[in-house]
Image 1: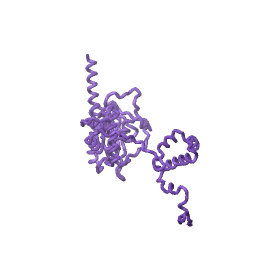
Image 2: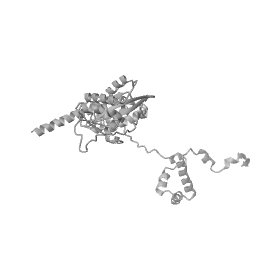
Image 3: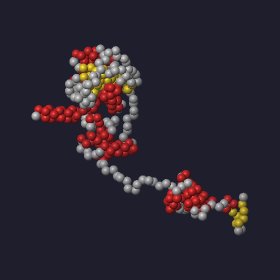
Image 4: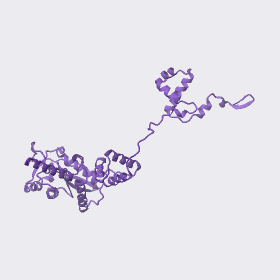
Length: 346
């Protein structure tokens, strides 16, 4: 439909009021369009700011703040601005420290910032745990640090009743390394159809662990593990504490009696009383089995476990020991014990 205006033919759609403004509007967000309505209402009601604020349910302070930013020719100013500070703290750590953190995390993929900072300080780096945490975060954001995929290979054992058990006396307390060594087994399923039995012995004072893997968990393999335990523990073992598993009966019990080692057996359905070794099983699952590269043949696995046992006892910082290794804790314990003996002598 066309009409004539002052001798000119023009399109009636071009005579709609405000069409140029509508055509020139930028793509605004929902919040910016809402703020634009404020000022349209404000212009059409005699520039009454209080009326506009009451109508839209906003405070006058908020309206005046946006009014100072409002420009009808630059409506993008009604968008939210970034809250990022103009001055941002820049990293102060060196590239050498970043490379050292990356190497250690690749070597020990399950260790967090609190353990890695201990190893870095041993290498001469002066840094804090928060700095190491920021470096790990940056490495993950850049995609440089590839976290190992979770591979839950352990299975919970069914609890079995035990007709006879020797309970730990209530007044018995572990004060020295070797006073109580908790022993437990773990089902490891690294491959379909393959089930291995992992033995862990943990001293509750020093957190020193002894590890061994077998194809089956019988009382005879458990009894043989006692021989391994006594050879590798750097102190004499006085008491062994186990749960009610069948592998800790018969030959295992006879071996403890032959070696004159006290045997404490937990009551049924009480794994929390063996909490130290239960927590150790989780650590060995996450930090060894889920990240190790081995054929899982017993010969290869035995060598790999032995290497991990050395790292666990002499390299890995333990939070429960004030971020000392079990080896460092035993050395410090012997020094303190020697000082006490000298003081008592004089």
